Image 1 (tube, one colour):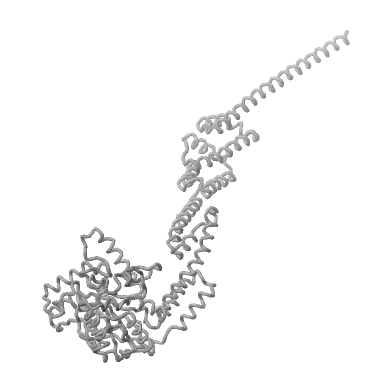
Image 2 (spheres, one colour):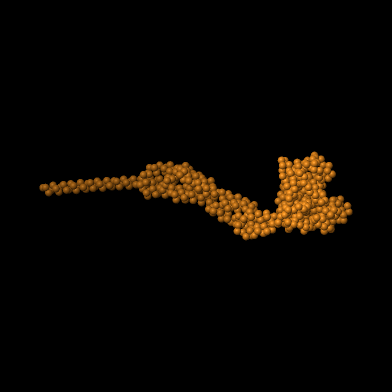
Length: 598
């Protein structure tokens, strides 16, 4: 009985144990089911969050993230999915931003809220996207800078993009320099082009290789240009200037033996300079007779042409004689020491320094206007530019053909002679061109200021004057009218003021300021004459050139006076003794001149 009772209790215990086990299993099952339900719900929320992220829904993504933050932090796998989504979308966001240059507010909220999930690798890649997009010219500078500013904004300014901005600015500046360099390249300003091409950034692959190619080409062209320019200077006797000119470019040619050899060569050629205290001669001419058969045709002009003009052949013979007798052209300004005291100039003699063994010579040309009365009489008719942009003459031949010639008047003939004999010119000096204005200058009608063609005539004359100044010529006031009242010295102060004012209004703007006055007919007043003071002091023409047989010079307190010798037909035939310092007149006279009967 007792045994039976014990067995019953065991059954009860076993039953209770089974029941408890069942309850436990049911509980565990319920827990698992509930956990699975929660996990599925969490997964759905994560997926929903990722969808919001991929659609750039900043506000919705922020709320969704806030609701599952704790769960995410406990689930590294799901957290990684969210982080990957943020980083992927961030890179697409940067690409879109740099190309379009704009964003919407939801995008900014998204990456501002999730900035902590953006990896350093993604940030670096974002910077690369911005830089590469700009380098490949798929966005503007402003878009690139805007994109960098956006990155600072979404980081709430924890991210410093200043160095990246500097990179963009350097790239931009380099490209601007490239564009400017192309302009200078087309203008043949190769030194400036090289300097600008060099500013292109090496990481700017779209431009850097092209810049290097242009630099190589510019170096070749610059070398050719500076060698030609130094040759020009050397041909004018400017050996030291030629050497210094090339030396200025050694930065670009530090290893170029051609340039270095030329510098050494020019230094050797530079002549020894010594003081000169002998006479200084000043000779002058008018337009040259190109065709004597047209000039001496038996009309009333023959006498004037014979007396006051020189033929092309005679002038060329004179140049050879000057050169053979060791004359050298100088700038008349070397003869004066000029200082300004108050409103007036003080003029004193200057010590002349010349190449050893040389004698100074000044050449001037009067009336380089090519007056109408000379047309058809065998003279050049105007100054023009030839095909090489050199000063030449327009000439009518005996057959009525119009030709451009460099052998028909003094300016181009002397230019070419100096090229052939650079030691005939000291520091590039050529001569003085004395201009009137009543029939324009250089053969151009610059006196007809109301003419419809005036602007073109003026601009052409100005270009010629600029070229002449550039190549060693100077200008002088030869009066505006060349009126006969200068010849007999009856010119009044009123006449003189009118004449000078007219010249300064019409001629000076073309040729620039000058302090040289070449008196018409060689007139000269006493030093205390108010007309002389007006010219030399008030109008500041302190170098005053007259006409006189033996080339006298003297210095007044406010002026320097120099007499000139006219080397024309009258001097060659009648006053040949005046040519003794230079040549034998008989060796110069053109046999095509008629017999002098006047």
